Every structure is written in structure tokens, then in C-alpha cells.
Image (tube, rainbow, N blue to C red; front, top):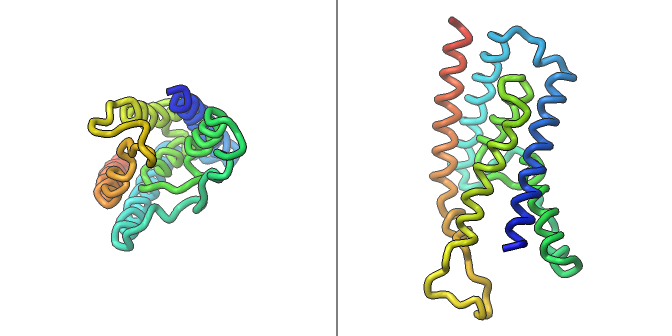
Amino acid sequence: MSVAMAFTAAFLAGALAIFAAADAVGAALGSTRLPLQWRIGLAGALLLALAAVDLVAMAKSTYCPIGWRRQTPRILMRRFPAPLVASVWGFDTGLVVTTFRVAAVSWGALFLAALGLSPQWAGAGYGLAFTMPFLILVSRPRLGRSSSGAAPADPGLEWMLRKRSAIQGLSAALLAASGAILIGVSVD
């Protein structure tokens, strides 16, 4: 469980860092100084575009095409202690932009932060929304499986990855609905 806790703490740190960075980049570029109605309309358009990205990914049976197509190198597991590797992996994954994503919804959250429409600490919400289910998943009893088996017990990741298309559909629906609402609010 210490490895899972190391991953979780580092993921939260990465999420807080990237949302603070998005907020800072938005401020530096001046997006937070745009009139509120413009920022809301722009956010709506960006969320609708991200919904389209999810729909394309669903049609192509692939992951979200936005972001770097890489992951933390697995060879680190042979060279360093597991809690350290889990920390590096957790921080990397928490950064949103540095690894594979199933759906585009996390990009929408970053855009909202860059436009000054969500607070910096939204990263804490993002981080907790990922890490709490993760901790539940890895801590639940694995019925019918022995920890002494030759292959590692699958805590459910493969099952969740098989649900990729459904998750992308939910992401697309959430992004489209939110984008439409924001555009509607911006024209009032």
C-alpha cells in the first residue's frame, strides 16, 4: 500500500502543479484579462471542440490524440525502489499533458483554468477524482486470486481500459453539454 500512497501523493502534487501552471500561463498570455463573456464563449467553443476530439477517438478506437504519446519508462522499476518509481509515475500522470489520456475532459479542465474560469486549486479536485477511485481499486480484496501467483493480480485496470469507448462517450457528452451551456450563457 505504500507504493499506492506514493503514487497518490505524487499524482496530487502533479495535478496541483499543472493547474497552477495553466492559471499562470493564462495570466501571462492575458486571457484572464479578457472580458468575462468572451472567456465564457471561448471556453464553450473549446469544450465543444474537445467533445469532437473524443468522438473522433471513439470512431478510430484509440486514446485521446491530444498530448504526448509516452509514459514513464518501465525500466525505472528495475533500477530504483518501487515507491520512488511510483512517485515519478504518479507525478508524471498527474500533469495531464505528459502521458496518454483516454478522453479529452481533463484538457477541458486545464483550459478553464487557463481562462481564469476555475481556481488554481481545481487541480486538487482533479487529483482526488482520480486518486480516490484508484486507491479503492488497489485496496479491494481480489477474490480467488493469490498474491503468490506467477502473474501480478490485475486490480481492474484491464477491465477499465475495455470501457474506453464508453468513457470517451461520457466525456464527449459532458464536454458538449458544458460547452453548449457556456456558449448560451455568453450570448445572454
